[in-house]
Image 1: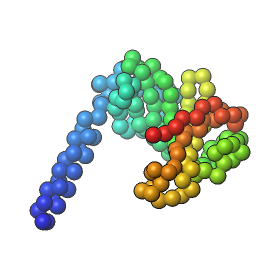
Image 2 (image 1 turned 180 degrees about the horizontal axis):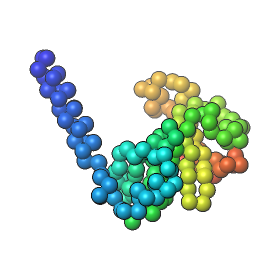
Image 3 (image 1 turned 90 degrees about the vertical axis):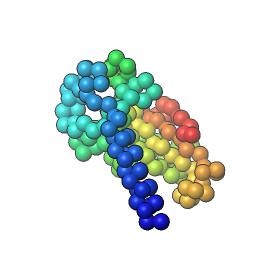
Image 4 (image 1 turned 180 degrees about the vertical axis):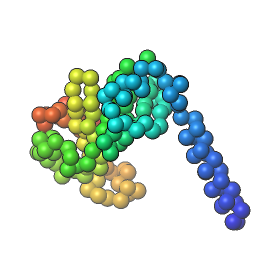
Length: 160
């Protein structure tokens, strides 16, 4: 029994190591990505790099905030998502959320989304009112609600 648990733990460890090792290196990324990141985010500490749905994704930390920058297949910047806490989201967007159809919904993720022509603020909300996740799966709805800097809802996406 102990041997099988150790074998399982060893297999999990090797799998995790394989996942990390199979991430992309700088040599596998378009050459314009790193200079762009360094010019836009001078304090960036680069983390994991990967390819997802045809886009390149670079995870990094900038000014103590977790970020993900997305680039197309030739390395042109598409957007950057920056993890923010509720209290650091713009007050006008917090007020707008509290006055919207999603007022009273549980907020469990907040991000600033920098786009080439705009900055949006995303609130991921759930109408489960704090129910245990295992029971709430069948009865809750999750949405990403995007606001512009003026507090207007720009887009709502259902999360599946």
